[in-house]
Image (cartoon, rainbow, N blue to C red; front, side, top):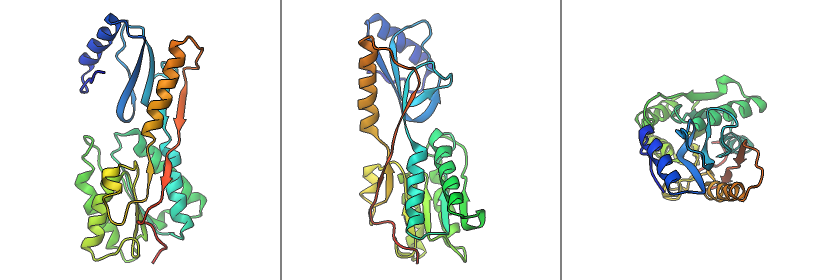
Length: 246
């Protein structure tokens, strides 16, 4: 196991180290869903990418979470509960999942007949990962102060949902009686700690690792594998943060 720390030079050194140790296979894993160009160089080792995919299609097999499906399921759940005025605060656009989740939200609300006038969307700002914390509270407060405020707010991930909870409580609003809130990731430190518990879509961490390892074993065993992309679904996790619209 080796951590690049985000350094391309360190990555090149790690590949060479793996080759010198005659490693049979590598799981190339990123901490968030994104597009990368592995610094493989002249090293040839069987590799499966997890939680990321290569810039060049077909370069390496990859296995990624279905951010689009997870956000679609969350949106459908809110709509099925009767919500028709919905706010959305986007995750940092540096992350690939940010656009996939927002696209799913917009497409699904259109299919249910909602227009842009029914939605309050905050696109946030670009910056380093974690920078989204700087605008979530303000964006949620502005949404919830509107005359026809959203009856539900979707947040880009669970950590951002913390700021939405705080904004709602600061305005004297109850969750979910006055406003429903959903997140994404099922980051248990947050989703279970918040009261009421946060409804979210769970990133399939275990399945990504398990299926990726199985796929790598098949490659090492000499099986012919299509160097494409496999997508793992994100399970909808229902908790107490969603109710009927006020």
